[in-house]
Image 1 (cartoon, one colour):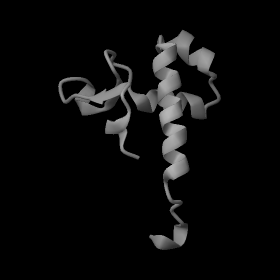
Image 2 (cartoon, one colour):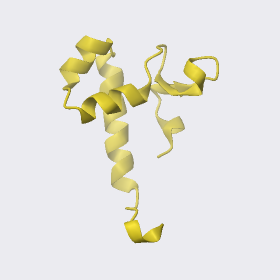
Image 3 (tube, helix red, strand yellow):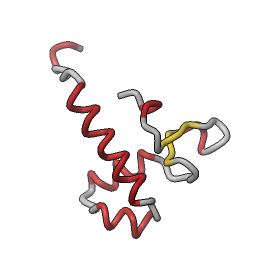
Length: 78
């Protein structure tokens, strides 16, 4: 997945060691993904991490579309 094509996130070596962050924040994308994997809802994320709802919506749409276009990696290809 090419994160650089998502307009609501950025990577800046001056911020959080260059991790992918939501633009104009210090919130790493990895925190949001991990929180979703633990069962937090979108509303939980907005409340707990002060994620901009529009940024989050755009990010999740980007991920969904990107995953639809990626070819699956099969275990026997490693």
